[in-house]
Structures are given as C-alpha cells and as structure tokens.
Length: 474
Ligand SMILES: *[C@@H]1O[C@H](CO)[C@@H](O)[C@H](O)[C@H]1NC(C)=O
Ligand SMILES: *[C@@H]1O[C@H](CO)[C@@H](O)[C@H](O)[C@H]1NC(C)=O
Ligand SMILES: *[C@@H]1O[C@H](CO)[C@@H](O)[C@H](O)[C@H]1NC(C)=O
Ligand SMILES: *[C@@H]1O[C@H](CO)[C@@H](O)[C@H](O)[C@H]1NC(C)=O
Ligand SMILES: *[C@@H]1O[C@H](CO)[C@@H](O)[C@H](O)[C@H]1NC(C)=O
Ligand SMILES: *[C@@H]1O[C@H](CO)[C@@H](O)[C@H](O)[C@H]1NC(C)=O
Image (cartoon, rainbow, N blue to C red; front, side):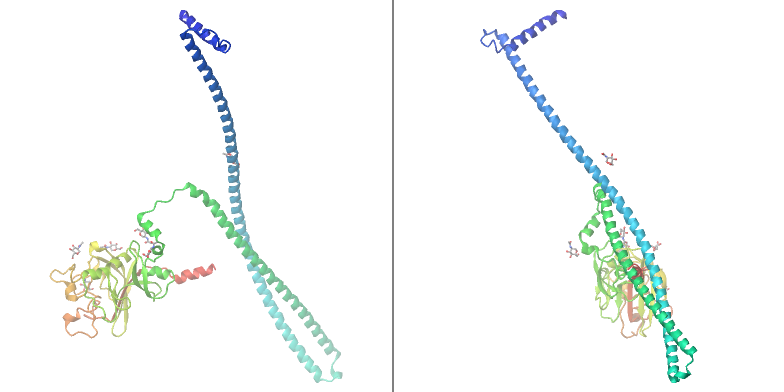
C-alpha cells in the first residue's frame, strides 16, 4: 500500500507547483503532451474554485437576504397575532359591555316603572288637594255671602278671625299645590330623560350585539366547509318565489291571510298548484270539493278525477294527486260540510290520509267529531273508483257506473258526495241513489244541496294568539 501511495503523491506535487507559477513561465519551453493536459486540468480546477467561491458568496448573500425576509415575516406574523389577540379581547370586552348594558337596561326599566307609580300617586294626591281646595273655596264663598248679608256691626271679631284663618289655609294650600305641580313636572321630565336614556342604551345594545356577532362568526366562514345541498333543496333555494309559497291554506292562514279565495300553494314535495282556501273559520282549509248548484257534471273519468276539474268559484274537484300531496303531512283533517234543502248545516271530521296513484288513492280515515253519522270510517283501505276504473269491492257491479261520479266505493249503496246533483227530488229509487248523498240510518237516499270537503291541519296554531303574542313585545 505504501509503495503505491508515494508515486501518487509525487504526481500531485508536480501538478501543483507549475500551476502556481504558470504565468511567470508562459514562455517556458512547451512541456510534453501529457504535462500540458495536466496544466489544463489545473486551470479548470482554478476556474471551478473561483466559481465555487463566487457561488458561496452569493449563497451567503442570499441566506442573509432570506434571513431578513424571514425576520420580516415573523415580525408581521407577530403583529398579526397581536392584533388578532387584541381583537378577541375586544370582542369579549364588547360582550361584557353588552351584558352590563342589558343589566343596566333592566334596572332602568324597573326605575321607570317605579317613577311611573310615583307620578300616579302624586297625581292622585294633587287631585285630592284640588278637591279640598274647591271645597274650601265654596265654604269661603258661603261665608263671604253671609258676611255681605249682615251689617258690619254684626260680624263678630271671632268670625273675622275665622275668615282670615280660612284664607290663610287656602293660601298655603295653593302654595303647596303649585309646589306639587312643579314636582310632578320635574318627575315627568325625569321620566322622559330616563326613557330617552333607555332608548339610546337599547340601540347601543343592539349595535354592540350585532358587532359582536360578526366578530364571533368570522372564523366560522373559514373553518367550516359549505354544506352539501340535496338536489331537491338546490332547485328550491335557487327559486325564492317558489320557496316562499305556503304548503297549504292552513299555513296561508297562519301567515295572516284572512280572505277566502284562490291561492297558489305548494305542499311539501309537490309542484305548486292553485287551490281554493276557506278562511271563514279560525283556521285555513284547503277545499278539495264543492257542490252548490249542479253546474258541473261530476260523472267524470279517472283522469279527470286524478287531475281535478270544475271552477273554483262554482263547483269543482281539486284532484286526487293534489289531495294526496296535501296529506303528506301526518296531521291532516278531512272536514265535510253539508247543507240540506232546509238550509240546515251539518259537519263531520276525520283524521285523513290518502295514498298515491300506485295504490289507486286508497283512503285511510278515522272518525274525530261532528254531527253527521259516521258513514266513512269503515272505508279505510278502499281504493278510489270511477266509471272507467272499477276498484270497488262489489263483485258484479261497477258502483261508479251505477251511482255516477268517482268515489271511494266499497260495495255500492255507499255515501257518495260526487253523485248526481238533483234540483228536484227524483221519483225512482234507482235515480235517488245516484244523488249527492251521505249515508244516514234514518233518511234513505237524500241528495244534499251544498257540500264542501276540505283539508286542514290538526290542532291549528291560532294566528290571533300569535299576533297578540307579538303585541306584548312591541
Ligand atoms: C400570540 O399571542 C399570544 C398573546 O400575546 C401569545 O400567548 C402566543 O404565544 C402568541 N402566538 C404566537 C404563535 O406567537
Ligand atoms: C321561479 O319560479 C317561478 C314560478 O315557478 C318562475 O316563474 C320563475 O321564472 C322562477 N325563477 C327562477 C329564477 O328560476
Ligand atoms: C317535508 O318533507 C321532508 C321529506 O319528506 C321532511 O323531512 C320534512 O320534515 C317535511 N317538511 C314539512 C314542513 O312537513
Ligand atoms: C289500481 O287500479 C287498476 C285499474 O282499476 C288495477 O289494475 C290495479 O291493480 C290497481 N292497483 C292496485 C295496487 O290495486
Ligand atoms: C291508517 O292511519 C293510521 C293512523 O295514521 C295508522 O295507524 C293505520 O295503520 C293506517 N291504516 C292503514 C290501513 O294504512
Ligand atoms: C259502512 O257502514 C255503513 C253504515 O254505517 C254501511 O252502510 C256500509 O255498508 C259500510 N261499509 C263497509 C265497507 O263496511
């Protein structure tokens, strides 16, 4: 190993020395080809060294510069952190201030009440005094009359003294009254001042609270992702006009509408449609059927019963599809209102649910109340039938065909409010049983004059109580 190292060392030495003095010996005889290539390599090395040196310098410069920049950034970050910290301190301070303001407002309100009571008390006292004053005055007047009626010689010195005493009393009373009035005025001024103070405090409070809310909410914007929207909701929220539609007439009523008439409604999960709202009771009802004069032929096809027919101002059938969408809510109530030819009114109510087209609009009905006999609750599970779609339970006959009109026919002989409208009582039984009838144990085949079937929500929220509630806070 040692033997090998020595020549290598020599070669290195030989290569270094000429490199150091290459400039002085530029004219020196040209060395052998091998030596020259070695010199060239040495030049390269020198060049490389210089380059490296320069690179090192610029690197150092760069590092210095970067250091400065990093320091700068750190400083800025510190400032930012500081201001953020200050902001949060400020926010909490504002919150505290708001709480304090709230407390102060409460105290001031109590003070206000107290002052009000005081001023009422003073007012009643003033009234009393005024009354006393007028009594005294009339007494004095009487005495003065007496005095004038008597000759001067007859007035005793005691009477004069009495009169003078009364005058003094009246005078002092008047003085105390003016004082009291002054006090009352001052009190009312004080109350007014308190009121304005409370008002400004309340305004400040609302401003502060909103400022506080924005401060508190800002981080959420950045920390939470936007919510994922369901396709149905997306189409909803893109159209605000549709979004604001009431889901039924009950909601329309809750919103404060009191005029019966045609409105656009949109039950949950349904397309918007027009419906007649009956607002005459203390809730809103979506009318699904009305008979009143026989102007509309109710002997219609399945398609017509499904989509609805007639005239909202006269007679109509809203349509099974729409009624089905109305009962998507689990709290639907079916209200049936009938009027006979003696102008007597009857009604009956059922808890109500109507299946969709896939089940041929099977009805589910539970009796709730009313003065009509319950002729429908045993129809739960019955499908809707028309003359062109016989879904009734009668094996041999088509009830819709024999009774006319579409209905939840079970085995014919049933109630049918979509039957034939008779202005005069028909002669034969086969005709009569086609009438607008509600199965009654006593009256057989009676055809009613007026019918109205509507749907509303169970236990409706009374809008009048809601508005009075709002008044309390005004
Ligand atoms: C931000 O400032 C707070 C309060 O001044 C301090 O406690 C915290 O250590 C700082 N954070 C950073 C990352 O400098
Ligand atoms: C919203 O819906 C209404 C009624 O369906 C329609 O007339 C209107 O053009 C819609 N607007 C938008 C922005 O989609
Ligand atoms: C509307 O329907 C959806 C889905 O069936 C239900 O989650 C929501 O509670 C309903 N809204 C109302 C007001 O009935
Ligand atoms: C609905 O009615 C049609 C025609 O009357 C009938 O073919 C179909 O089976 C009924 N659907 C059900 C679920 O009973
Ligand atoms: C009818 O509705 C009631 C109450 O919602 C329910 O308990 C019952 O199962 C329903 N009946 C049928 C046959 O769907
Ligand atoms: C329902 O009850 C009435 C009498 O209350 C009866 O005339 C009718 O046939 C019954 N319907 C069914 C489907 O049981």
